[in-house]
Image (tube, helix red, strand yellow):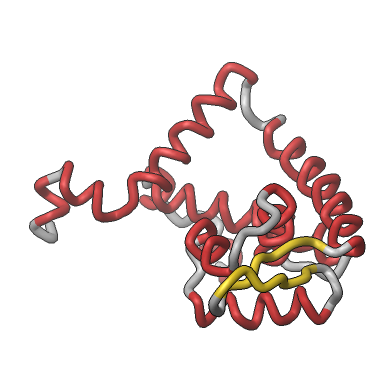
Length: 162
């Protein structure tokens, strides 16, 4: 028996695990989004930053990092790249803080980002029955917002390391 025939017959106990399925689904969705955004030379994280700045003109780099869960050290090169590309301007607001806003080029780019993300989202939303879409989003938000700390407090098995 060749290797391909053997691996295609594996029993997969991971198929029933929620975390495993979420990770695999996330990988598929992010790969799709990444390839779509690559056509405009952006990565998903950069598109997310531009989208947030557009929705929150005057926000700071720290605000963005907190919202996206990106550490300061990782935000710096992202913001440098978007500034050098001409998509973001910085405006001093006091002390060392700088407010962020999109340039005209950034506003044009975020319009394209919205169209790409809209097509990407539509592709995957079609996989859900309409009545399940909002429920799925709510469950995913709960997982994300709950965070590890809150989950550990609610579940004694998790707090003991079991």
